[in-house]
Image 1 (cartoon, rainbow, N blue to C red):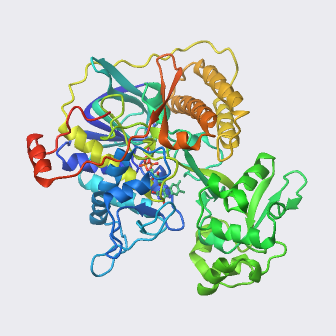
Image 2: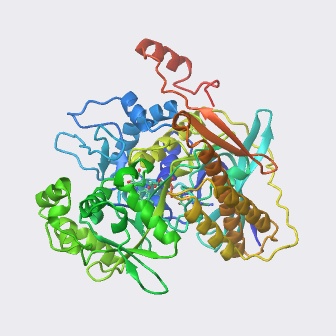
Image 3: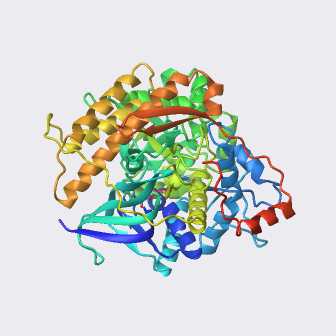
Length: 613
Ligand SMILES: Cc1cc2nc3c(=O)[nH]c(=O)nc-3n(C[C@H](O)[C@H](O)[C@H](O)COP(=O)(O)OP(=O)(O)OC[C@H]3O[C@@H](n4cnc5c(N)ncnc54)[C@H](O)[C@@H]3O)c2cc1C
């Protein structure tokens, strides 16, 4: 197999919204010795995910709603387990990032006076959310990609990075590059191994989609956080993810109108075919059930606080339980639930449907009146809601945790900058839309740091030794992947059991040890599958261990909110776990003359070396 070598100042891994913005920021700041290596141009979450009204979160630009970065930082971190300095930076840079997207052509709606109005999203008291429609992140990708092409930033497409390279320095480990595999000969690049020697690596590989069976991440997103975990990069809050009800054949969040029209939920036994309206038994009255379904439209993500007292998240628990017991669960828009009466749906739901002119006989009629495009969307993907039930599951959608970055998004591995969803900047909760903002802000910060910090020329990198031993157990990669995904969706999704999680941790590491003994295959395509599975296996073991540790502390709500669980693999792949206190929102008062003087002294805001890591 051919091996080629590339030397570049900054390697950017991935081509989602976070990666592309980082490339543009570096280029515009004068660092043009950059290269994007991505497994699939156009793949990943940003370009392929969407929802009812896909949201971008930023400081309020509504002239009627006063706001400040400090207030936004407080709201970003109000759920706990988020560092205050990171929240302040995400708030502070949110407008810069937003207007950058506006300038690139993302069609965020505004009025004739230049106001970009907002609406309230979850965990948001200030109506800071905005949207360019159901495909906001896709539009971001398109506009960012156009600029990357205009700047002729080199792109290595079809390259899967399988390993990060490091070198030892007196200050500790530093990044030295990465190894990728290219499956096919395209764009003047031969298939085979590519070694990238780089002073900095921006890792923008997105969320860990591939570890889940029940997932609303797009099929093209797998995630590669294991690459960084393996070289000892710190991670945090890995146990905190977002889940919600989504369709599984065509992956799409069933939020907003899909729930507000109160569809019929039922489960079916795949062997007997017997169906059951299983939600009915768990709610004290039809009215309580109908209004919980309606509320799910606004309260889409699973929230453990909304389970008690027949809250909307009880539905997620019950759907999850049906699936765990071997039944399939569906939404049916062609018929009402047993006992449905439009007068029994609760005042809020009734008023909403009335004002929207959507009082229809059946859920599909109500949906047609409320939001015809919601029906068209499924039809475009071969599913006719007017005739067939829609299979659903409680699906993984976003990882609030991820790799740990400092205030410049640099990890503990010097020169390695995790940005976008692979960076775990969020806490226990996050306002809807803050993921897209955090991804853009991360790119601005990382590129600023890279262009203002001298990084020494790399020496020859040390590849991570990969022991190849005879196979002691027979195991094939696809059954290993199924085991990983089943384990995560059954035991590490929205419902977790502290009694059984320890056994899952053990089985996860056993699987990792078995896989690690497999000999490395030779062809590019088999090597990609082999490293992918290994990466996902390591990832799921580390996630499960973090969840286990989190569950041990879960009863102490105050502790969970005021501390963050950091984890790090040592050289023997033992996981070190450390709870660290949440850093507060910085409260230093700004005095213009003082900041100006410091700015000039520091060569126009060059980051000072003793900034906290
Ligand atoms: C259904 C859905 C709805 C959402 N709605 C919202 C919303 O309304 N608001 C919001 O803020 N967020 C939302 N999110 C989350 C948000 O879309 C993502 O967090 C964000 O798009 C991630 O961007 P990213 O650039 O970090 O990663 P991605 O866009 O996922 O890009 C990752 C890139 O890395 C590449 N890659 C991965 N591994 C490798 C490797 N080993 N080698 C080379 N390349 C690799 C992939 O091919 C891809 O190009 C939603 C997510 C989903 C799934």
